[in-house]
Image 1 (cartoon, rainbow, N blue to C red):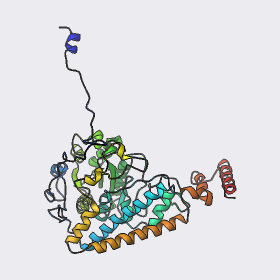
Image 2 (tube, rainbow, N blue to C red; image 1 turned 90 degrees about the horizontal axis):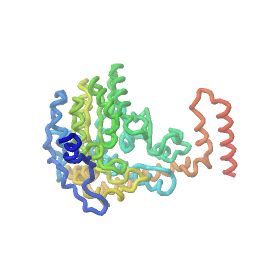
Image 3 (cartoon, helix red, strand yellow; image 1 turned 180 degrees about the vertical axis):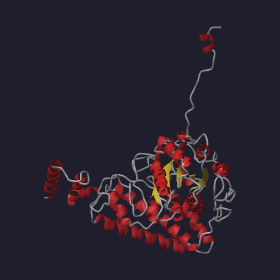
Image 4 (cartoon, rainbow, N blue to C red; image 1 turned 45 degrees about the vertical axis):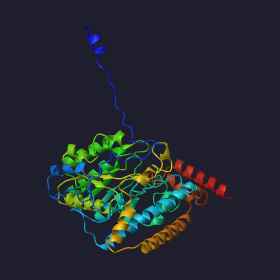
Length: 426
């Protein structure tokens, strides 16, 4: 038999292209997900070798059970006041998101991204970290700023790119930045924040500082080379950093299987790098808090990084530019088996006798008014539509902060823009 004949008799090669379990028009089906019982995951000692955590990358750290009771070894046993504050922060994020989403639809800003259903990922972690720790977020962690009491009006001014925008209109809406609040500049280039977080953490250790870093990255972005380079450096040098992979099941319009989620868990990446790993119920604020606190204690003890997969679901579209009905069943998020993070924490507090429906409704109205007041104040300084006409100085700053001394040709262009804007105002 010739080699050509032998080759023709072999079966043809083929590639596997991952497909989501349901497409638009299909019934919602999450039966393929294995959800361990709350409290079942073992909690290793903070000082345990990384390898002793690797069984946990295939499980799921959960604290709140189906009756909203805190159970198991990961229960952080938080006091009621802290629980109420976490509930407030998550509720405020959702109210803020809804208000800014409507503002985008009204043409007041160009772009917005909601974190509906993922509020616990940011808020729970922010409460477990020290306020001096540096956070390197992706674009759905506005809850960190809210939990750290960053002014809502300043957040809105950045979204509107108006004359009070602290970033002077040089960032896309929702790409906040605040050194004073430990919130590193959000980048539209995916995965870049992870090596930056690892580098910052290494610098903190080199200086003998006590501050750690935490980064957040989406499931799709873990396929970027930056993520793998960062994980290598973090493991090799035992950087005091927490790497959070927010697995919300969907990238921009492709499901997590395209990034490897069909092969194994995202937390399992920790095994290959020899670092500690956890897989956590991202809709359980207590589990997020407990896992982050455990990882932070580990980092502060010079025991190296921890990779945490936050297992959650993106309820809304990727952004205001995305229509999720084009690639997944309508209202799929309503059937997510791990529920809504706000409702779960509310029910837990009610079960403790530390909350009730009347207080919840009152807080909801109070927060709604707080957000409305912040929006009124922000819009006094303009919106995306009005800023360039009513406040020409806000757009002419695009020529500034480039050179130590502005060259003559930029001065001419700036003056020409001011003149044209003034003419439009008349």
